[in-house]
Image 1: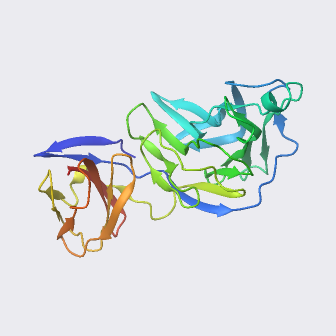
Image 2: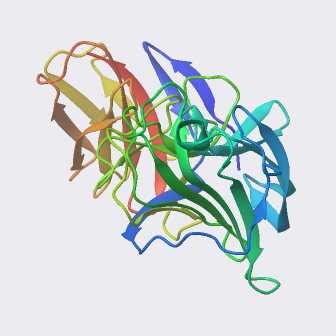
Image 3: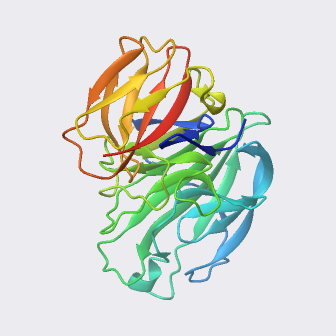
Length: 307
């Protein structure tokens, strides 16, 4: 796969992107606490800890292989690929041992285990009855991260709880840019979240008991990269635009289009019925946007424009 690139053509910027490794599906399954799992905390109260844990198999993440991952007690797994950081989980919560509110003499562990037979194992991590630093006792989190050996899929499972300031959930690879090199995060309504490639997003509320978010790896039909825009010769005009954005290119009939704002949110969508069409944008606020096209043969390209 090729890396994200930016080109300047005439008055506007072209963004050439590779396909995202993961897509999202959701379900609701009864939450089951881990049993027979290893207590990584050693029976001690925990806060702002980092541990290295064995996965129990070789996990393929963003075209790299891992047999261990670092576990941050704040709710995520992480490691590095070159200069980029890989992060899996709840990345903006400041989780602490729930025993800080219940009783210092009864630590509540963070646990992990690997289940299954060779080739179909599942690695699982659980935060049980975790609290949030500085929050009251109503902030309780029951949450698991699963990584599948066979498919490479990653899941987040939620039990009963509440979080006054919900973080995002993500499987991401990034090196400090506003956009991920690869991966997606979840934003908005936890019952029907949108996906974003912008760092530091969050969902509106804590998910309902039994909610499962599956980050599906290599799902058939995921769009593939258009190499520097050559295949469809896409052009947008005028840019900046006020009323109608003209889209012109090759073999665009049946192409899906999405307009994405600077927060990574999809705010308009439609289908191109011919190679030269106008999209009304008079209802958009002034600012920076991307238009994403996904062709019927699953090629994808982004272009930037200004309203």
